[in-house]
Structures are given as structure tokens and as C-alpha cells.
Amino acid sequence: MCTVKAYKKFSDDRVEPVCEHFNICGGCKLQHVPYSGQLAYKQKTVYDAFTRIAKVPVGEFLPILGAPQSEYYRNKMEFAFSNKRWLLPEEIGNTSISNVEDVLGFHRPGAFDKIVDIKHCYLQGDPSNALRLGIKRMAIERDMPFFDLRVQTGMMRHVMFRTTSIGEVMVIVSFYQNDPEKIKNLLDAMIAEFPEITSLFYCINPKKNDYILDLEMVHYHGKETIEEVLRDVRFNIGPKSFFQTNSEQAGNLFNLVEEFAGLEGNENVYDLYTGIGSIALYIAHKCKQVVGIEEVGLAIEDAKRNMELNGIENAVFYAGDVRAILTKTFAEKHGKPDVLITDPPRAGMHPDVVKMLLQLEAPKIVYVSCNPATQARDLQLLHEKYDVIKVQPVDMFPHTHHVENIALLQLRS
Ligand SMILES: C[S@@+](CC[C@H](N)C(=O)[O-])C[C@H]1O[C@@H](n2cnc3c(N)ncnc32)[C@H](O)[C@@H]1O
Image (cartoon, rainbow, N blue to C red; front, side, top):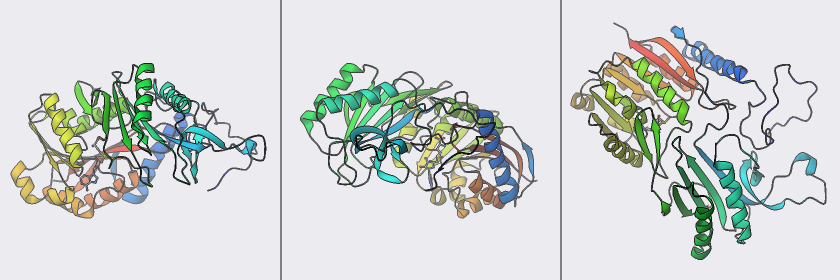
């Protein structure tokens, strides 16, 4: 990993990073760039992808939509416990300072067994910081050993906080060892000190890796889901469900998708890579039917539950790989799409899916992407039959290099 040894002169445009962990924890890497500069950089990233990779004419490059909040915008954060603290450069060599210390924070990039102890994180709003500091203190008070990432011993492993704009809070604690009495004691203390917790889960992770979504989530307290509301659509989110991590900007993104789709009420819409049906459910009131496809079966179960919760009756959801499900026979069964919305993962769409889109000939495609490079690659292929009418980047993650982009494609007559 490259690190800066010394700065000769700072750029005149540089701003003072707000966070004391800037350049140490590995997150928020653009905090020293003014927000307007971050947006310009992201706009250029999209422009470059379309002019250098896609190389297709674009009707209109719309200015990037900045996030309403550049701090405290995330609704989900995960922190790791460790019995070794990452030492700051100025602490190394000082024999009175030891790295043997119980900490809770983020992995130091490039040092898998060291955790940067986080005092305050500007990514997630209240009560995230208080919860993190509280659970750390309570675990230390109860002699619950923090995880040793190298030797793989200890008890406290991870904690995840999920918050929603209507004030619901889910906490998921991951333990390495199962000690029911100690676990109960800690969780009861958390509930007593933080009545804000509306949903509490824990899991036991004795594996070598940190991945918890394949583990049983034990429901300990409160509701089994938390609720988020985007405009008037309610989403119940379980401990394993994916949900856009910036709720406020997700609403703005979905508004733009709806606008690009130009729905008038009679359309048959396909929503590929639908996740928990977020976009499908958001636009359902504006079209005749919406058909969602998503690989993760649990997400489709959530989509169906949220459909009921919102009294939506014109949506259907299918679990499986888009490449396998989206066939000509499928389109005959559900009717040819008037508008096709696609929001694939970073890798973009499989070439076979692009081929199927070319065969389906939906009059409009709204392509949402978190990776303009793969989006540009796919648009080059779709250009065989489609024109790119307009492109609109959206900033979902201030202070990071990530950029979301929406493109409207129209079938050439
Ligand atoms: C960027 S997310 C979009 C989710 C959703 N549109 C939203 O806004 O919440 C991409 C989704 O595609 C799903 N996915 C990835 N590969 C897939 C595939 N081959 N077939 C179907 N779904 C897939 C992922 O599980 C994930 O839910």
C-alpha cells in the first residue's frame, strides 16, 4: 500500500477533514476535497466512462445530484472488536504505549489483524456513536474478551447498527464464543441503557471469516424488522436484508428513476436485479404491472412481504438469476415490457442478459448503475438498437469515490 510520507504543500482547494480518523481508518477518503470538488470529480468519472468506454452519443449529460447530507448519511454500519489497536505513526517506537488494548472500530487497510479504535464516526447519525462506545464499555466492564484476529480467540467479534429515518434502530452483535449467561448479561444491559434499540439480534460466528449472513440470527428483543419509509412506501427490513444504505438519497434516486421511466399508468414494467423490490414497490402506483427479478431468495420474500404491507397488488416477484429467468417465454407470460428498469451489481449485466434485452425490445430502458465503467460497456452493446437519451449521476456516498448513475435509453425506430 502507498502511503504519503510528507506533504510539501497542500492544494489551495483542500479543506480541513472533519474527522480525526481521516487517512487512518480507510473510509471517507475524499474528506479533504470540498464537496463541490467531489461532485465535479464524480461527474467527470461518468463523463469519461461514456466518452472513453461506451463511445456512444449521449443526448444530455445532466449535472450530478449531490447528497442532501454529506455526513451522517449511512443507515448501516459494521464495527469490529479487537484486542489489538492500530498504533498511529507518532506512537510507534514509544515504549510506554502498547497496542494491546480492547478496541472497537474499522480494520486498518492492509493490516488485517489491527483495528482503528473509532472515537466518533461521521457516517451514521445518532445513536450510532453512543451505541458503539456503550457496548465497548459494557463488554470491558463484564470481562468479555475482545477478538484476537491472529490467534482467533475471544468473545466479542462484531456489531452492526441499522437505523431508519423514522427512528428505528436494529443492533446485531456477533460473538465468537457462545457463553449464554454472559451474552444475556450484556444484551440486557444494552436494552436497559439504550431504550432506542427497537430490534436486537445476535449470532455466534465461530468461523475464520467475518461473514455473518450465512449464520442463524437469534432474535433477542423488540421487533424482528425495522421500518424505513421512502415517500409513502413502507419497507420492513430484516437483519439479513439488503437495503440502500443512504435512505434519503435512495428516495431521490428512485424519484429520478420514476421520472426517467415517464410512467403514465398503463405500462408493463420489468425491474431487473430488484433486491427487496425497492424500485418496483416505489413505482408500482404509477404503472399497470411491475415484474421484479432478484437472485437472493430471502430478498424476494421481503419484497413479497413489503408488497402486502403496502397493499400493492400489481407486482410479481421471481427469485433466480436474471440470465436464467428472463427468457422469451417469460416475456410471453408476463407481457412485453414497455419500460425495463435494470440495476445490476458492480459487475454489470451478463452479455446474455444484454442480448435478451436486445431481443425484448422494450421501448425504454432505465439503467441504474453503481459502476459507470461496466454500465458504459453494456451501453455500447445496447447501442445496436438503443440511443442514450440522457444520463444523470447521483451521489449516494459523499467523501468516497463511489458514484451512482442513471441512463435513459430509447429504442431506435
Ligand atoms: C445494486 S443492487 C440493486 C437492488 C435494488 N434495485 C435496490 O435499489 O435496492 C443489485 C441486486 O442484484 C442482485 N443480483 C446480483 N446478481 C444477480 C443475478 N445474476 N440475477 C439476479 N439478481 C442478481 C443482488 O442480490 C442485488 O440485490
